[in-house]
Length: 316
Image (tube, rainbow, N blue to C red; front, side, top):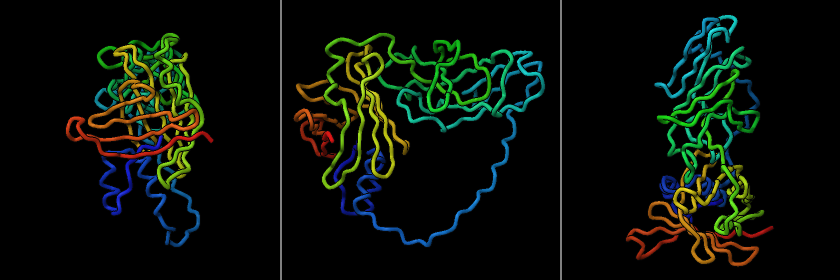
């Protein structure tokens, strides 16, 4: 989903507005005016191998506890789970898939690779529920393990208590806190209010174009999932849902340049209107093949609005 405002003439302004807009859109703006590079090419180089990290704790057959990051991650290894002493590491990681269902900052990697426990260890992860998907019940957040490129709920993951959830794990790997997804199917008419966005789209904003967006319906018919990619290779993901908590539409957006933000609103006539702070973001289906997608900002409580960006989704 390209999300930007009209391009300013000065380069300084382009960087100033970064604080109030996703970087994915600034990238699109700069593509139109960026010239070729002027540096001299260099030959390939072989990076020096990274040294093995020093262990956070050495645990052996007697078992033990490893706690890091002021208790943000805590591992309890039972007696007999390890046959010999192992220097374990437990480090925060960002090497996780782009996923609006996950709780930001909750990823940890347990090493060294290949370590397994004869009896399951208990991993507890603290998290900030405000960095998870908006509009969901925090009670449905659980520890997940990364399997290839996909998350899988870890065994015996417990309901959160005191901002933490615990699971049984079999060994080294990447773990994080993630929403388990809808508990049941969503079949009311209101759950279909955003279906006009489903499908494959091209995105244009003035002379800027080339971005694509795949919008699918998943999660037992409860979730509108977005998969955005621009010409520079920047990717964006969002999940939109009709919350069972406040019965409003919530959208959580993340992208590969570190942006994350939340929009909340409702269907207004034929349009979907979602808001954050003093902004409103509008999807207006003009016909079956065109959506007018734009955003505006107010500084006087909604008396007047100024444009942030104005673009079109069109079906290829």
